[in-house]
Length: 250
Image (cartoon, rainbow, N blue to C red; front, side, top):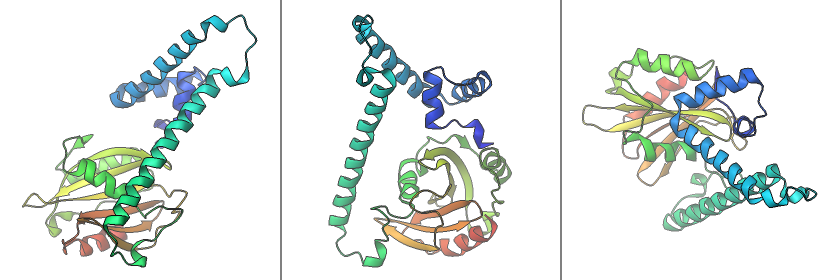
C-alpha cells in the first residue's frame, strides 16, 4: 500500500520525466489527491524551467558537468538541507539552554537526535489545528484510514473507556517514509495524539520510555513494524494505562 506514496527520489524523477508510464500514472493520481504536494512538485518544475531558460544561451557550448540540471538541483537540495540542519541545531541549543536542569537520562541522544522528536513537533503543529487529512469521530473509520496507509499495523483499542474519542488524523512523512498523527480528545477538550512511523536511521527499535519536552510528555515504544509515541500534556496522569493498552494492540 505504501508504494502508492512516492518517495522524494520518485518525485524528482517524475519532474525529470524519468518514471515508467505505469508509475507515473500512480504518481499523477497521488498528486491529484494531495494538492500541497502537487504545489511543491510544481514549484520544482518551475525551478527546472527557470534553470533551462537561464542556460539557454549556453546551448551551443560544450556542457560542463557543473552546469548539468540534475547537478544544479542536487546542490540546491543539499544547500536547503544544510540550512534546515543548522536551524534545527540552533533550536535544539536554545531549548537545551533554557532547560539546563535536565538530567542526563532525559537527553538520550543518538547523533544529536532526541527520541521521537518528530512526534512532539507533529503534536504541536497539528493536534490543536484544523489541518487534519481526515476528521473522524468513528473509531472504525479511523482504523480503516490507518489500514489504507500502513501495512501490518494492529487494531486501535476502543479509547472511550479511557475518556477519549477520536478527532481525526493527518498523514505525514519523514526520512524513513510515511508517518501518521492520530488525534483524540476528552470531554473537556484536552487532546492527545498517537504518532507512528517506520524505524529510522537513529532509532531502529525504540526502547519503551518517556521524556518531557516543555509542557508535553512523549511516551514511546516499538511494536511490530513501527515506532510509536503517545504525546500528551506533561501533567496528564491518565495516559500511562492508555499507553500500555496501545502498546499491546499496535
